[in-house]
Structures are given as C-alpha cells and as structure tokens.
Amino acid sequence: MAKIFIDGKEGTTGLKIYERFANRSDIEILQIEDEKRKDPVEKAKMINASDYTFLCLPDAASIESVALCTNPKTRIIDASTAHRTNPEWAYGFPELDKSFREKIISSNRVAVPGCYASGSNAILYPLVKSGILPADYPVVIHAVSGYSGAGKKAIAQYEAEGRDVGLDSPRLYALTQSHKHLPEIKKISGLDFEPVFNPYVCDYFQGMTVTVGLHARLLSKKVTAHDVWEMFASHYEGTNFVKVAGFMGEGTLPEQFIPANTLAGTNDMQVFVYGNDDRIMVTTRFDNLGKGASGAAVQCLNIMMGIDETTGLR
Image 1 (cartoon, rainbow, N blue to C red):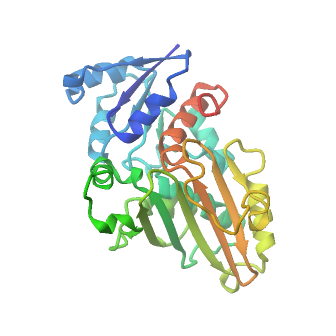
Image 2 (tube, rainbow, N blue to C red):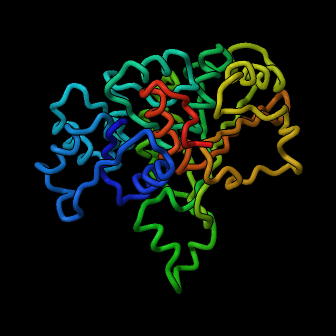
C-alpha cells in the first residue's frame, strides 16, 4: 500500500486531491496534526515517511518542502509554479507527447501544470510540433475561469453577502502581461516568445475554456481549418482524458456555444476546432480544479505507481 502525504491539504487543490482518494484502498494517507502542519521538523518526518508527497503550497513553501526531503525513495508531485520550467522535473501532462509520459514514469519529481497552461499547451504544443505554427507566431490567448481558481481570498469575496457589483460580471486581470503561467506556456509549447494572455475570472465556481485564434496566412504551411482538426484528432487519438470533438463541435455542441463549466468535477479535457479557412479557432474546455489541478496530480500519481491512470478519476 502506497503511503501518501499531502502538504497543504487545507487549500483548494489539496482538498480536492484528498477527496479523490476517498474510495481508494490502495493508498494510506499520512495525517499531520493541524498545529504542526507548518512545523518543518514534523513535515520532514511525513515527507520522508511517504512514498509520494503532494505539494499544494505557494512557490516558496514548495521549495522549502522539497529541501526537507532526504529519502531518495520519496517521489514528489508539486502543484505549485515553482518547478514547472525546471528541466530536472517531469512536466505532468502525459498526453502532450510520449516523452512527457515516459519522464513522469521514471522521475521522482513531477511538476503539475498550471490550469491556464494546461489549456494553452494542449493547443500550442501540437501546433508547433506538427509544423503548422511557427515558433515566432504572435500568439494571443483568451481564457475564462470559474472563481475557484483564484484562491481562498477570492472565493470568500465571491461568496460573501453584499459583495461588490463588479463580481457579477467577467473580470479581466493580469493586466501587466506577467501572469505566472506564461513562462511554462512558452517553454513547454516551444514558442520563441511569451504570448499575449487575456484571462478572465467569472461568476461561477469551476470550469475553464482557453482559446487561441490562428490567421491562416501567417502559418508555416497552407492548411484548412479541417486540416488543423485532423492534426489534433490524430495527436490525441487513444488518450483517456483529452478528447477532440467533431469538427465545428459536431456531436458535442448542440448549439453554437461553448460553455466553460460543463466538465466540472471531471479530469476530462475537450478540444474544439472551428472557424473558417482564414481564421481558425482552437478551444480547450476542462475543469480548472480537475485536469487543471488536482485531477492532473492524481493522474500523475497513478502513472508513477504503474497502475491504470484513470483510477479514482472516473
């Protein structure tokens, strides 16, 4: 039985990981006393007694917890931003490429992708790898997320009585173009430059869409919108959690709308290709707390354990 420690179980991602283990008999959760959860001595005991430790912490705290690990057999899965661009860590998005999955299997250190980065790289990595998108393309990303991804303070603001009227509408943020997910988007996708990024936090709890628009005249080779759809369908064929909808959303979208919250509670991600042959649009839809956080972390654990990656996620 695998021994699991969740460092930061009180946060949104940590709680969701803990909930996903509720019906699993193949793991044992190591519990730390509440008053000792920030005690480095006690944390070190838990980390080094575990087979797998999840870090659901701010970046600086994650780095500190990694330093507490002296057991060479303890494998760490970090849900913070701290190690996502570190080449010594595996990047926890196995569907992107066979090499990503192989590194997750063999590594003792896995960095779980950010939610916006997951949706962005699911689009950009295949486009760059296929040779359709030049690495110097001026990418613009538009994204919307439920407020659960904004942290405890924001959740409290959205759920408070007499809240500010501005919370009733989508709110654009990251106005300085320095969002913390941009470095990993650039590195993992293979882009030469960080994209323009326009994220919105919205008045619903969880779920996310990420969209990239393509001008066909600026692509590396002549392709139609259907060609792009075929590339994505081939790239993600056979994966358990990333599914490409029919062209123009056929078979998935009963109307010509893509709501952001319909995959809440799952570890699924859908890819939509639509538009026309001049302006080709690609959108990913998923749960920012699922494939964008806790679900992805548990999926990585399953892969590292050598068991069915869907365990506890269906």
